[in-house]
Length: 347
Image (cartoon, rainbow, N blue to C red):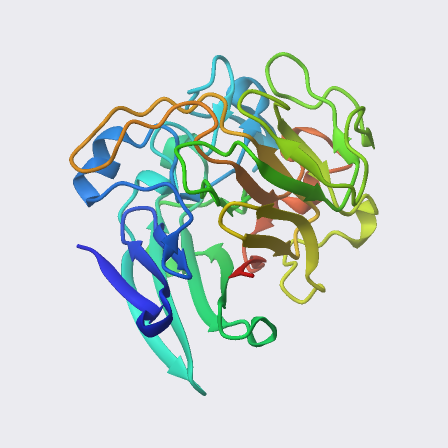
């Protein structure tokens, strides 16, 4: 099943979703789709090892050793799919699951599409039965002469009603949700020539397994607010950048926090701009260097650097770092929430 509920066809703007993973299948601005995709749900089911457009959960990024300790008084072994680590919720994370939806709503001229999923107790090794709500809201960007479009994503996760899940005695679990869209603003098969600007130079240095090895520090090659060019092979990024290092201010439900701009992008050949805003304290910036997707149906082969990702999130492996644990620890009766906004325009 494919849907295109949020669009302005007269101006070549809109977004298409599919229920599997509540995936963003298309994001068009000025008539150009700027996200990597597949033409059918079946292609996503068989070939989406790169997570194109997926809702990532239960836990985005890596959990060290695939292990979560001191949760409900015990240690949980998660599904491992990245060496010894659990990556993006495991081999069958939320991006591989079929959501219910879209449920379409129209409020004061603004269109929204809602997707729901019930994640069962034991899902990829995680405790607790959870109710997941993903809401996409599209609107024009008024300050760009009608050529702009913004897509807001809102995540809400909570424990399901215990009365309906009598075998689930879990009091707490772990959650860290994001979207894994790959963007390509060019009119070619790669991101070469894209100008990138990160609004922070603070990041979490990682070891060879992608796990933070120290606290927040300054990135050796990034200058805050200064544009740089993504070329055919360099620079290479797969790093977690930090927008908020004030740990006490980072809440489980960040939706009421002000939006921060995480990164800005522009391609001179198409004149397409992209801004990523979020209420989250961090984001993973990935230049797509390990993408390797064969030709399938009408979709061409996609290789390294065919798209880049900006994945707003909590700190990597937060559940296993005592000072960070609170930002991903969901207790029964509480709500996890976050917001992401993609703003794109031509001009």
